[in-house]
Image 1 (cartoon, rainbow, N blue to C red):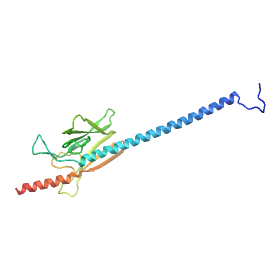
Image 2: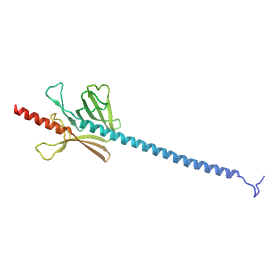
Image 3: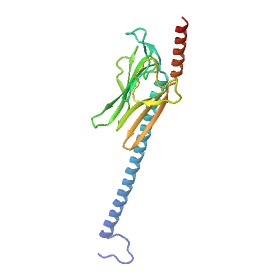
Image 4: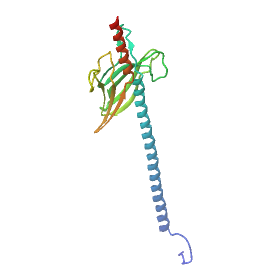
Length: 212
């Protein structure tokens, strides 16, 4: 039976074309939705990564600013102040990652290489009330992570950055953390607020010893 000019309806070809167009539109809409969801997920992951990055920097800053001078139990008369090289540093601090611990903690930072040849930065605490805590990874998947330390002789006007700090009777004026990925390098300088107190305490002790 043939359609007349006054009849309304679709032929099989028109129906197939309509279905094809609907499927095509749905595919485009589905792709747009997937891309939108990926963009949102990527944005959330980036925000989470930035928050973790900022939190890790805050941890280092808080522990460095809370650095202490404490006596060495195994060697009376000597003090643990600060030790560091390009891939590690150790010092006592009254700021613990796990809340208020009795006494102080000895904080150890170290750079380690992962299975892909990238470098990660870990922090570990030991001391009174700190057991079974293990390590915490602060930064990961960088081409290189390293420290250097600002040394200034009290008799000199200018100081310089050194790769190693081995003296146990003083601390650096500043610590610099380098994070390198490809040609991009980020450097963060952390001043040591306790340094002035330690220097003053040493000067007072020396003056008292001279007066005896």
